[in-house]
Image (cartoon, rainbow, N blue to C red; front, top):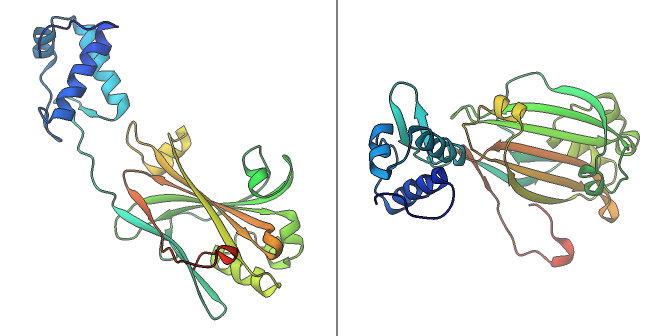
Length: 256
């Protein structure tokens, strides 16, 4: 690589050359990039151009800048913990994959309403009343953090008095309460990835340019009627999701 000759903004060209070097293995994970002066000489560009290129690569999550030392190719570690998303059922008790996680704070209970996103998942119009419960969980072995939210429609709580009195009941116990109320439960879950909001980044201690994984699990009762919605958010570089999949009858698919 030498003097930049591609079309486009100079800093983007420099970033593209460095990116190609990382992909080709010229710059190994954890190794330092050439200094600003070396990059200026190599690509025949100005210092502001080099700094903009470094900033762009940092925003992409390819490099990290260590104060007083320089820029380093970011090493992408394997996820620290696997969150098992399977639900198991023994007698009247239910268990989820994060039941052993510790609560870092007291659960926050509040009243809220369905949005354009949560409403359709719960089969409700936008603006319907909900109980909300937020939990900050930590894995005792790795320190990995996760945000867990439960949204309970008032209609569900009205038919399960325990939930109206204690919305912060643990999800496993909520499943048992709903089952005792006569529901045959099934679950539907979707998984997505997105960049974190500022408060999520701070709470989950997420590095720069790192997405989160976001699950939305709907508990369905009799006639596939949505009863509650659970959301789980965790840093994508610290956690991965695990599922046990069985070949059930398509008309009876459920978490096992």
